Length: 75
Image 1: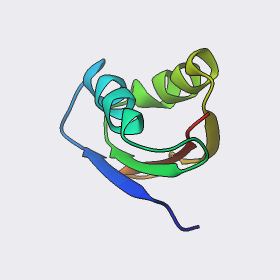
Image 2: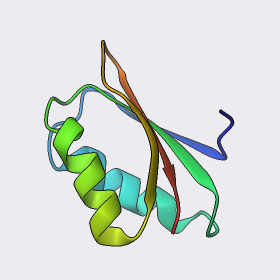
Image 3: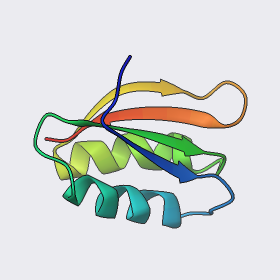
Image 4: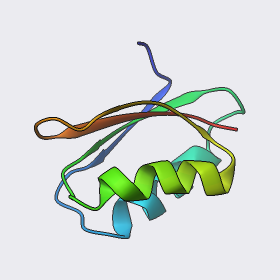
């Protein structure tokens, strides 16, 4: 799937991947998508929780292998 922006959060530990995703999403328009690469084990829980709390849509989460790949649509 195509996306509008990328965020490489590999090497960052909780809560930095979510904090950087929040900051990066601020630059996007509603409906645009952000692809996030992460390798923090906590991101598997943190990304879906962040999306539901902030009103974004977690389009996909590829958590098998590293890096994990998340596709978030700005709400």
